[in-house]
Structures are given as C-alpha cells and as structure tokens.
Amino acid sequence: MRLLVAVFTLTMLTAITGCGEQPAPETEAPDDSVTQQEETPRTGNSIVLADGWAMTDAVSAVEVEAVMGTPGFSVFPEAASSASSGRPIGSYNVSSVPYSKVRFEANVTGGQEAYDSAAGFLSNPTETAGSMWDSAVIGEVAAGDRTQVRIIVLKGDLYFSVSWEPEVFPALDRTETCVKLAELLVTNLYGL
Image 1 (cartoon, rainbow, N blue to C red):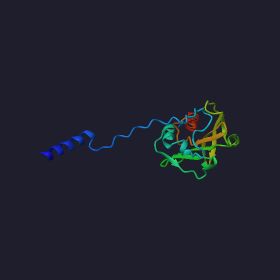
Image 2: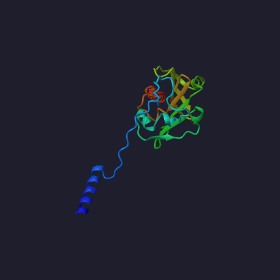
Image 3: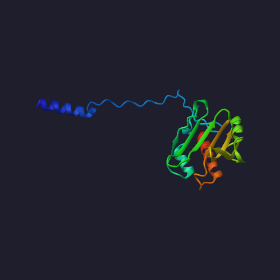
Image 4: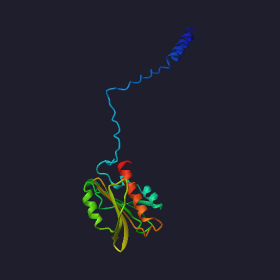
C-alpha cells in the first residue's frame, strides 16, 4: 500500500509540475538603446541600386516581354558590359527570332558627354519630352545592313540608350515603345 501511495504521489507531483519541463523563458523587452535606421525617402534623383549594378539588376526579361508584347525573351550576354566601371550593358532577345534583340546601355558617370556623342550618330532625330528625364531623343542608327530605332536619355549625369529593330516588331509604334522601354529602366533604377 505504501508503494501504491508513493507511486500515486510521484505521478501527481509530475503532472502538477509539467512533466519535468523547463519553464518558458521570459521574453526580453526591446533594447531602447538600439536605434533602427529609417528608410531614406526616395526623391527620384538618385539610383536605388548599389554601385556596380548590372543591367540585369535593373531590367528583367519578363518586363521586356511585357513591353514588346512577345513571349520568350531571355538575357543575351554583352561582352562589352562593364558594370563595375559604371558602363552596364544588357540585352534581351527571343532566341528563335533573328534580330529580336532589345539592348539597354548606360553610362553612370559620363552622362552629358555620352549623350552628346550618341546624339551625333542618330539619323532622323526627334526630341521626346518626358517627366522622367532631363532630355531624350529618338532616332535611327545603322546596324550593319539593318536599321535600329534608338532612344537616348539624359537624367542628371546618367546617360542611357535602348535600341531595337522595328522591322522585327512591325505591330509596335516606334516612339511609344521606345518611351515605354526608357520609362521602365528609369522607374526601376530610381525606384519610382
């Protein structure tokens, strides 16, 4: 009987104390001495990507597909790209469609000079106003025996251009498509 009482007592004590579980640790109060950084408000005057950004950090193949209205775009490597020196270049194409390349190029530090130089290579240039840039021009450039349409843009000290062949995409309006591609890049670069 004593053994039965001892087992019963031991069982009851175990049940009351939580089967030997350790008590839950107390939650610590937040340390008021640690200050959290507040997000810097975006003004639209500085690029939100880290220095040395590559064009694939700024524009995706899916976004190019949406503007061009054609599925199947993928990244086309550009050997001349030099993201680390502020000259990223990135292209996207549909591998089964010849000459479907859409090429983005930027010059992060030599904007005005690059813009002026590029403007000299455009034929049939047309100024294109826009609230997202300081100035822009759309024109044509020779690409071997083919013709590309190109928009060149200056925003602050950033120059960039976007080129594509309208013959491959006959349903697209040249000006509207150039503006959409340029706005896509500016929106992504500046977090607008």
